[in-house]
Amino acid sequence: MNVTQEYIGELGSQTIFSFTIQNDHGIEVTAINYGCLITKIVVPDKNGNFENVVLGHDFLNEYVNDPYFLVSLLGTAPMSLANPKVGLIATNGSANAASPINAVFSYLKNY
Image (cartoon, rainbow, N blue to C red; front, top):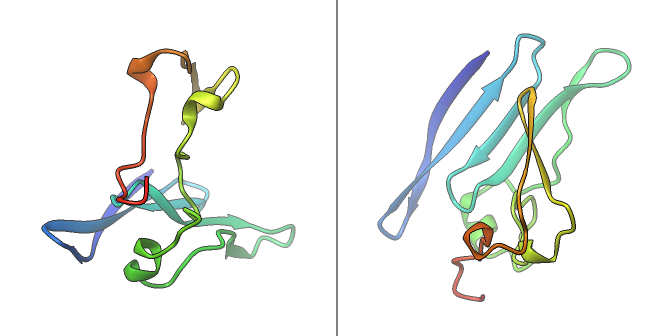
């Protein structure tokens, strides 16, 4: 498994980086530290050709101005989830969505 970090740009006083995790089979996931937005998931097709399957943006400012939170890892209303589950590598976990400690709210000025 390989993890890389890449500088993306500045947003106000926040430095934005992308973080890519790639496993030994070439599958990779990339997210940025602006709302934990997933910007790329590369997986093989039936012929073994690797392609990015995420419908996302090319530039940081496009994510900033996206009113639909395209590729957002966590939505703006997590407490509406029933029996939430999170898969982390080979371990599954669960969370009590009704617990205030597990509530995640968008920090964007529109919410």
